[in-house]
Image 1 (spheres, helix red, strand yellow):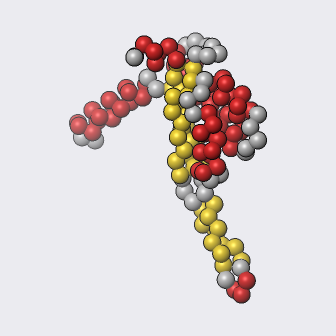
Image 2: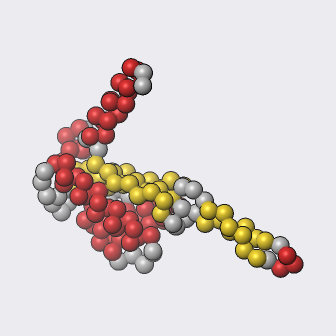
Length: 136
């Protein structure tokens, strides 16, 4: 690895040390369905978002709830303290498209219809409210 590439990689690693996030790859639901649930909790306080996800009827909310709990645990691990209610909020959440499995379904008169089984990647960033206030 070249010197310039190595320096930029170490700078990126140091920048990520101050971020608290969790990532879930290859979720077997369509990105559109996952984005509907992600939009419900974007910018919310973390424990309030857990309540919204727990009582949501959408299937994607179960996976997002588990991912949000993981992001909160990552924040607690890096800060060596327990997260209080009202201290954390979801600073960023985004859903990216992942690989699509292409399948064929039998159709009339010897044809085949294409079925696309989509999947996605979800990333949640959490941050403390008071650290955001200190920066402004």
